[in-house]
Amino acid sequence: MKTRTPYGMEIADDCATCPIQKDGFFCQMTTETLADFQKMKFTSLYPAGAFLFVEGQVPRGVYMLCRGRVKLTMASPAGKTVIVRVVEAGELLGLHSAISGATHEVTAETLQPCQVDFIRRDDFMTLLQGHGDASMNAMQQFSNYYRGACHQIRYLGLTPSATEKMAHFLLEAAVHGQETPRGIRFNLSLTHEEIAQVVGVTRETVTRALTELRTKMLISTKGPTVLIRNKPALEAMVLA
Image (cartoon, rainbow, N blue to C red; front, top):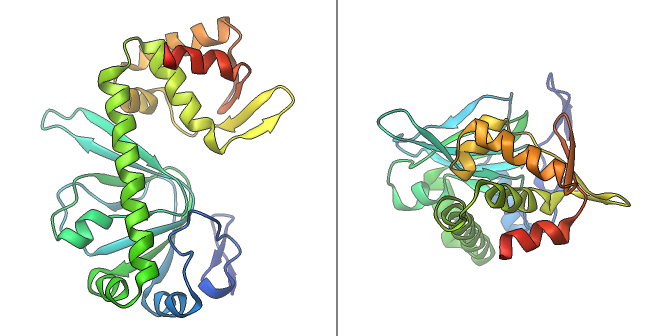
């Protein structure tokens, strides 16, 4: 069943007939597993800027991101914030803490209106123990987290120049972009300050790096829309 909401989205609250499932979603499971998942979950809509959980909080369960994007951040005692990664629809949030029982290591904040399915920790553990396909999907999510951590290390420690960091960041962001005759087009929902928190530079450095890439005709931008005009050249910068 679909329900109209104030955020211009429709809540798809029936997993069996959900129109937004696709490859890579945690909920790609058997009919039996989905039926149990359906009984356990609580579906909610969140506006942009909402917090699902915060760093240091005791885990209550896991959050299945059905629509939208969420940023995961980590803060130092001095108040410096790093964006660990941006989570796309189809992933579980809070998985490590829910399984281990440890407090959340990051804060999860919505970047845009999101549909989220919440499952209590005890119910989720029952789902994993009773259904092998759910356990395999959880392992795939852990694999995604590991990959994201490796990219974060590359941003912060192994890429020498700010321009190369930006090239790497844009290529990652373009994975879900649209191929056009002029290049790969995608919307970048992060501000320059947030991009700086991802790649480990200052906001001013992000602005200069983007300007350099535009000057070299490798990309063009219009508002939040980015067009990668010369993907091979960007890839060459990353591999150099």
